[in-house]
Length: 114
Image (cartoon, rainbow, N blue to C red):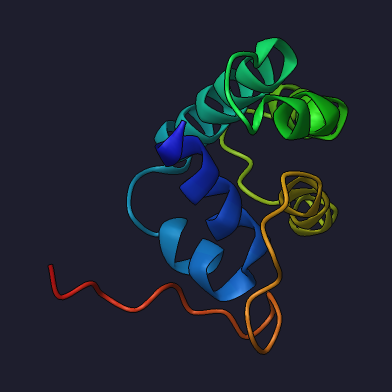
């Protein structure tokens, strides 16, 4: 789930997403995006047994909607004008705060020294 949440964060931040889109052929990236968001949607819908389960279940409809939009996108399509906004809505529903400066300016988390 960490990979799916990280990808959701990338999708919410246009600068990060633009760089991510150059890492492999569009068809491969579309498959990764689609599969991780579908897995996150399934996880959210069935979350239980942790303090965060209620939060994940309440976010499930938004995550499911995004996953459905991604699944319906033409093969190789890596951008729809609404995906950034939907990703941000999902993150908000999951309780992930907007980074300082907002999603438009977000360049990623600083590298850890560990």
